[in-house]
Every structure is written in structure tokens, then in C-alpha cells.
Image 1 (cartoon, one colour):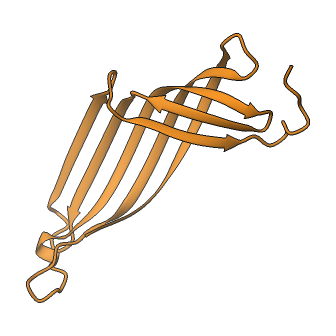
Image 2 (tube, one colour; image 1 turned 180 degrees about the horizontal axis):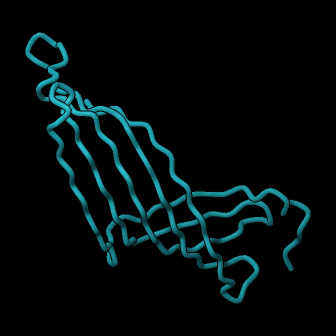
Length: 129
């Protein structure tokens, strides 16, 4: 069983695509997570010999598009990414036993397409032409 808690900071740069409703964006994000990966014995007890404390750092760059349904509500989609991740596993029974895993992934033609919506504060009084 893996239990993790994390936080991610992200920033975006929006580029007008010739319409006040349609924008492209580039997103940069940085995240940290920490938690445990627990293995259980046959009696249902946590087995510290095979359980780890886990920490993760991540950095990513991804493109996306955004469309305003109204001046204060938009839908968005992002696809593809350039991501760097580092995972550190420290054994709970013997903290001198550590495993580190670092990944650099480029998902140019990724099969994952993420959708979302945003509510924009401060834009509710604006009108589209």
C-alpha cells in the first residue's frame, strides 16, 4: 500500500491565438511528494523489512490549449510533456539501505490527453465581442 502527500507549484504563459476566446499555453511545474510504501505479511501486519519511506521530486514542461466558454469560465486540454522525476526509497527497518530512481521522459506523442476547466477571478465583468 502506498500513501503519499504532495504539493505542486505551476506557472503558465498564455499566447493569444488570434481570438479573445482561444489561447495556447506553456506550463512549467515543480512538485514534491513524501509518504510510505508498506508491504504486509500473511497476518496483515506491516513488514518493515520490505517497507519504505518514499520521497519524490518532479519537474515538468507541457503545452496546452484553452478556450473561454464565457469571460470567466474556460476549458483546457494539455498533452505531451518533458518530465524529470527523482524517487528515493529508504527502508524502514534499515535506513542505510536506500534506492534512488531518476527518470527523464519525453512524451511528444503521448496517448494521455488531460482535460480541465478554470474559473477566472476578476474577468466576470468582461464581455466578448
